[in-house]
Image (cartoon, rainbow, N blue to C red):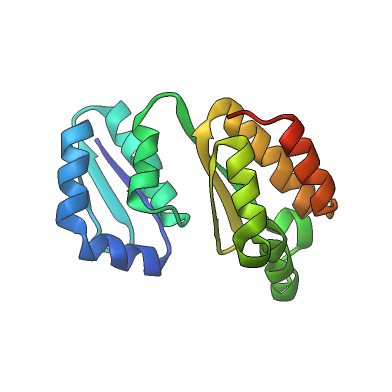
Length: 167
């Protein structure tokens, strides 16, 4: 079976540069091969489930997670959730910057607190905010991020997070 994943050019370049290392890890876990020589990442393997799982790992990497965090998706208990920020603003570049800033916070404080209280990992890239974690952790992080994107005050979101602390 062969699947394709489209990821941003900057992430594709990193994948090309470290192709041998990443291919070895994916071969160890799933017995699949990736080819990042074209405009899309090609994933090939015998087991269709392993190909689909690898596709999700490559997609997470493309959304801004480092390779080790993306490999958390090897565990069946982990999932990737991607929030499209354009549904909160339209496509205005300035508004996108403001929303990303609300999620990241000064010196990464907001992102760090959401990760701390939810137990999930967060990546902000392009027009998306992505979350990797166990289902319950992702649910808590998603709720907090959606509140911030919707304009809720940071203090209120953090208080709610602290009360619902998953980890």
